[in-house]
Amino acid sequence: MTNSPSPSFPDLHPPRPCVYLDQWVWIRLARAANGEPREDSDLQVLAAVQGAAENGVAFPLSTTHYIETSKITNPRQRLDVARTMASVSHCRILRARKVLLGHQMLHAMHLAFGRPAFRPQAPDVLGTGFRWAFDGEPGPMVLRGPDGLVDPATIDGMPEFLRKANQLTELMILAGPGDEEIGILRQRYGYRPEAMIEVEASRLEWESSYVELLADYPASRAELRVRLQARELLHEHLATFQALTSEYRINLSREVGYNPVRPNVSRRRMVSFADTIPSLRIAVDLKVELFRNATKPWTMNAIHDIDALSMAVPYCRVVVPDREMDNLLSRSGTGPRYGTKIITTLAELPDALPELVEQAWNAPGDRTGWDWAGRVGRLLPRLGRPAQERSEPVVRGLARGIEGAARRGYNER
Image (cartoon, rainbow, N blue to C red):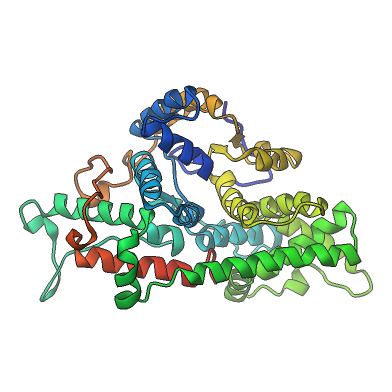
């Protein structure tokens, strides 16, 4: 079932096999978990996914899942989706884009420019929690006393309590606040979800404006791809790129052999360099197809999908996108290039899982990603209590986490 990546690309898949599910899949699974499956086969899919997760297959979430789940207006439905996500994924997360893409760029620089001279060490891909998704660093709740950090093992029952507190906090952040909590979050903790809307509007305008530019300055498919490479690198990832070239003292003009008399030479080298950055290449290939269809307007759903898939495909053995994105990915041969199986029919998913279960049994580390927090239990706490009964520190952490995500947007902005 599992393909191998092309020899010209690094194998970025972590040792523990991962399956990335698009938001529509989680919504279908949540309906099945509530006894209201859209199709009868969804119950079998849910059982297969739950079984694979219990046997160590990772079903990681991403920043896109947090953002799209937050847009579900009904708090009850949002909680249902979050519970299903948490119980299957264990709030295991793909690491922040800036960390993973930084490693990809460094690897491409090593191959293209010989700097760094060593092959860069791959970062940990999977972690748990909100901060791992947005900051790329672990951010567990810890126990503090008057004199600083307290070892929970010194207090009877505290490791188990602290693990549950961390898990409850992650589920609450994923589910988002209830309507009755919005007021206190705004008044006391500066909660402002409008910041995310502003970021999204800016990103949508950036993509939509290029449609008009292409109408005035049309380009062939090959030329469009080169333009989008430059656009993607400079607009989406410039800070990371500049930081790395500065750290390793890479003179780009010298490395690509820029010559104003023969500009195509350095242009070809730069295109080749960009193509060895997997997530950048996937995003560019998807955008090429979308921009070539000028009659279809850009949407935030498309931008979210590109964000998610450009990171999921290189790191997950199986990816389940929607039908449109599956079609666009197939046009560029993305799945086979990175050794990733891409499927869209939900009924096909159970057949792809047994091989991954076998791989998961031989993978290092614990099956859920929560061994660091003490004895592992089922990540499905109850959230049906009134807001005033929830602990103040957890609500405060929820506000700060959501506010930080909105402020940073999706990448490193």
